Amino acid sequence: MSVVRAGVVPGRRVAVDAVAGVAVAVVVCAGTVGMFGLNRVFTGLFFGAAGAVAVLFALFGRDTVELTEERIRCRTPWGASTLAWDRVVAGRFALDERGRWALALDLNGGVEPHQELVLLSVPPVTRPISNAYDMRKREQINEIRTILRQKRIPVTILPEIADALQRHWKIAPPTH
Image (cartoon, rainbow, N blue to C red; front, side, top):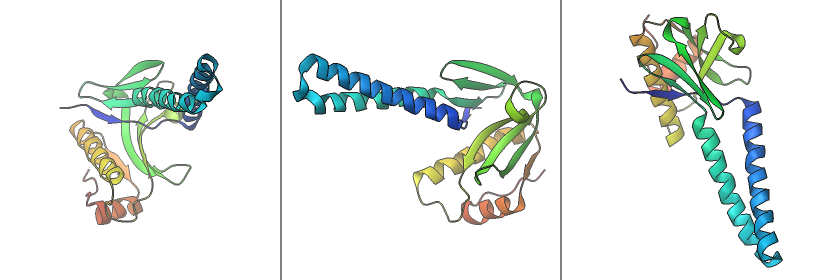
């Protein structure tokens, strides 16, 4: 069984990461202009933007949830934690507070907010797959459902979500 990667970056962490990216861009640009003079403003902006993109890729790339056969590994840019599969009570595909569809695991015990671990958040599906983003989200949903089925974890799904996934993305609703 391969590792299934998922995870949703919370809004506050997105803001902190964005500020870090802007700070890197400003520092690199200011350093370039300070060392080489005002004629190098655009060079400084270019290198600053490249540095900001590198920092953002590093921060967002490290922020994941990995589902393996043995455990669930939650990684952030500053640390990592592990959850045992026996803490998972059920899976749930429902609407989140922003009107997006969220695939989450309900947990017992622990310190997670609302006793849940959000694995995926997608905008409501209204049409067949039309781009790489849709294709990747469909693959993630199938991978997550497969591992949850293997672990015999029940999954509940709202009827309108199940209908849209079946009609547009050809994903059959859970059978248990």
